[in-house]
Length: 347
Image (cartoon, rainbow, N blue to C red; front, side, top):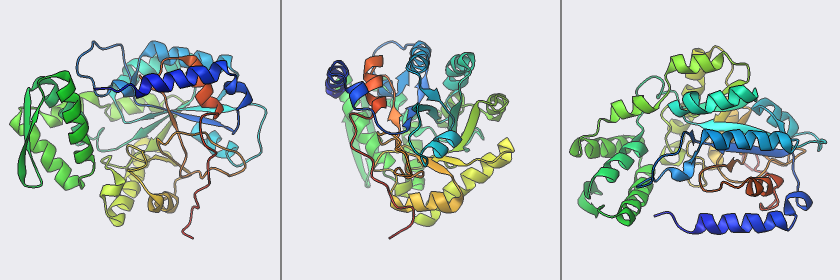
């Protein structure tokens, strides 16, 4: 089940705010904010993705707060520009969204459009094509409704009790971590086997939660929208050989540029945490032609080129922290170690 870590983090941030660190500790050019899903509140129960969700109302409060704090809300091109110049008089915030959940156009976009603020959407192109596999959602659905889950792991039939809420969270944490580390063919085979055993239509589920090209074309008509790439199939890059990883990055960019009829110069590492990409992928992002690449490693963007544009940190703003005071501390950079530049070429 969700731990007490979020509560302790929130408490620490609240203390830092009242201690004045949101002002005295401010540094850097600004911050890139990372959002996943934006949708109305969902009732309790088994919700492993609660930490990745905020409500439309909270998104609205966030944007209002950024404007009140005199942050410039900018697009990714402007992030790249400000990251290599001297410190300006105002700090920036950039709003970014990973994946192509329908929630964005149904619940987030009305808020973003009303405020007329720029934002970036990173697209894994298999999903609007209708062939992406949202395996993490299928796994959630299976565990949510079953009291026991069985599957083959390393050629051995394994069984997981999922009767209680605690057992469901434990099983999900283990299986999600295991599946993420699998090479894509093995991952696809594993989730299809699970879906067949427990009567989940993976293809239908993946299509229902995803925007299609028509939805994306509607967003693309708004000049405040920047499209970025997140590969084709959204694999964990460290699970691929280098040639396959570069192919995913190259093809994702090419397909997106063909579909949107514009340059797609920004990239998001799928999942984005420290275990999902490595230094070689930073080099690939440059070779493929991306001006920037974002992770989900927390931090702020420094000035004068001290933050590698193809290893940009992002502050994940989600369902675990609902205090705007906590956000202000995070945006100040006071809670993060100074960003050390990652060389864009091997030494």
